[in-house]
Image (spheres, helix red, strand yellow):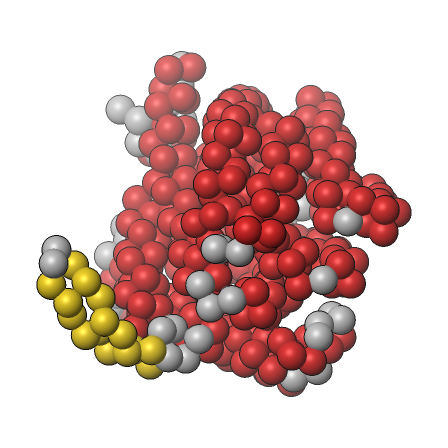
Length: 486
């Protein structure tokens, strides 16, 4: 048996069972991450057919969109980690209480982020140094995404809660479905009505001809459909978390204790993400003076590289679940074993992916753009980045394990220091002399450094802070008094 119940029931687990459970949770998570990146890859490929200007418009806004998406995602983590701890301790009523409170708190947070994004959508491309010719399209692209943030936040919360319960399969399958929907919607929204020849027959295919606006609408529509299905499954079908009958009628009012613990878990991650995306935006500002070709090549290369590192994020999600449930069950030795196991598994898989990326870099770029100058420059920087992928995996997966036990403050500081004290200064120094290549060499150096410091912290074991007392309080369905000292 390789069920998550082995952790909750306190059963002994040998190495083979630990590996099997890690693989069982990692595979769907990797599939979900890859499908998400594939969706972005397809978007980039379709937009790339519109020309360098449209590609630059999208590339200019990507780092800012990651900022808004990531903040909403990090906010939901404060609740899903709590749910994982309670499920590990078999406090199912408490886990459902956290879910109800999370629904309200995250909806409010998503609405606030949407209002903020809409308010800055018009001037933002100019702040980033974009040329007037691309700023109008960039603003439209951005505003469509941020307007949908309340719904997307619910998608993040539902996926996080399902994963906290060990259910990686449903989020994984739904992310694949989202990718398919995205292709379908984009096919009809981006391009104008045209004729397509297939097997000797010519067909007229209707199209809205909305360009990059259609790309944004197609992706948002796909995400909204999947958000609805994901949330329905969570509250109606997921064992231990479903809100049916009496459970659905209980209080949804966020309590001070749950909000405070969500803040302790989520705020360092949110602050770290804001700082990280601020660094990405700074990189965009550094790249912008290099010209349209450099902006587009940078954006496409970032998307292509994602195919390499997203397996690491999938394993990191599995690490969060495994370590979170083990921590909630009070099995601290098992927490350490899962942390080491998942981290080195992530390094192995991303090493293989790095080799593939190095070899296939030219082909990956030409799928996304027919412009030779953009494809050649993008392939060159991808090959630079391939050398850093194993150590990048170490930082990604170890971070996921640390999050599982609620240790988020120091890892956030480590990420902040690494990117702002290493990557940004090096990129600013090297870009004027080496162009985009210098920016990516700086990124490579920084990712290696970041991986080393995360491996060092993992080895020390100081990230695993046990509660002062193992919780023996009765189950509190309203979420008060559980592992407050953790």
